[in-house]
Image 1 (cartoon, rainbow, N blue to C red):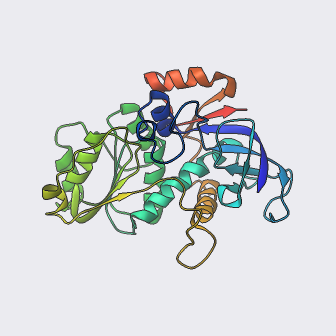
Image 2 (cartoon, rainbow, N blue to C red; image 1 turned 90 degrees about the vertical axis):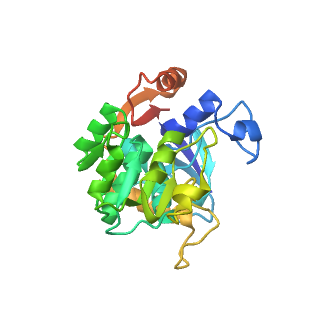
Length: 309
């Protein structure tokens, strides 16, 4: 493995707020063996400098910059499937996006999003915006993005997304149908983590469409298997993390999680995953209590929040 001395950590506002609020399902069911009781070390976006490597590591040396799947703190020890080197042209702040960039890329792969398909992204926080950026890079058409918050829609417009809608407005479903020639969308990326978005997403699917659940849900949702699912023959697809550390890619190349990280870092370096507009706040790690409070209250209009260690 590799030992890292951290310089920055990124805040995953969806997952970390679910932990902070106590709504993360694993806190009550304890099913998955981690993050199931307090105290918890949250976070999973660490940028830092390699301080030590073992003999098996050949892709980095001491002094190299890396971004890793590691909790907030002054450093961490990670395995090769959990980190990726940072190119010289990529800033530390931008590099934090490679983790959620890999997470959303994994979701796009899980939903098998293809060129020419129609895609609707519901929820334009950092996960939704990165999902939309992946979809745009694939060449989907039309690409529709939606969020009830005006400032998030404004961010999407500044990033060049063409069809930016308010899902809470009257006539939203009719707008989606008009943009898809009356079919509905082939893929919905539900990145909001609330039941209303889940239900709206299913209702907007075309026949044989796929609903990708990317938001962190803190409560169960109601699913009518006899309505939009059965009669439209739709699929509900789940996704989690950056990919499996044990599953190799279809061509037998290195493990899925590492390939997703490498691809996401390449997309960040080429500004396919935009960073300048998405890095909205920078704080010291010592201020994390205030950051969490402001995120929870909604007073912090944030995309990617980074913390100096």
